[in-house]
Length: 198
Image 1 (cartoon, one colour):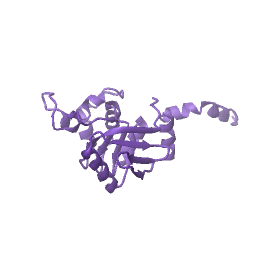
Image 2 (cartoon, rainbow, N blue to C red):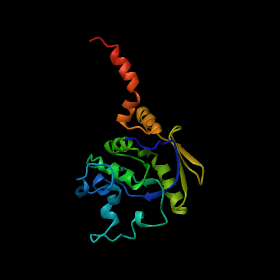
Image 3 (cartoon, one colour):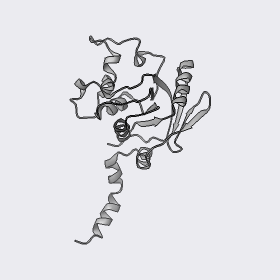
Image 4 (cartoon, rainbow, N blue to C red):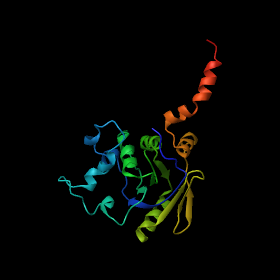
């Protein structure tokens, strides 16, 4: 499944300054029955967003109209817990293209990269600067430059670099998942196979 190319993202951000957000909080286990990567956004943070009767919890950040954007800013150790791919699917399906944190669980990080969500790990100090900028102005813009591997708080100009696997970076820049990457090399693979001895 191909995704939109990720090159430079400029967007306001949704702050979730909670540490140790695990995958069961991101998408509760009762919503894991579906096998297609659509429809999960409705249940992103379901138990934090809604009361049991389905009415929204006004104090939860996704239900507050002053916050919006394609970037989710979470606390330290985001995506811990079980390895469910559905957590990354729900983040993407909701509309986020980037999650920022000072630390990600490895499996969640890789699942995000596989579905077109860029996990940007920053220093704890820079994360606090981001939260402060959003607190000061809910419409504050961040710029994520994947090619240069930088994240910038546009209101202040403060910037930090982030790391990413080279293979995953190229895939995101081209809008590829792992299958698309192989299909893009179909001619080269065919030529190589023809040169192999039987």
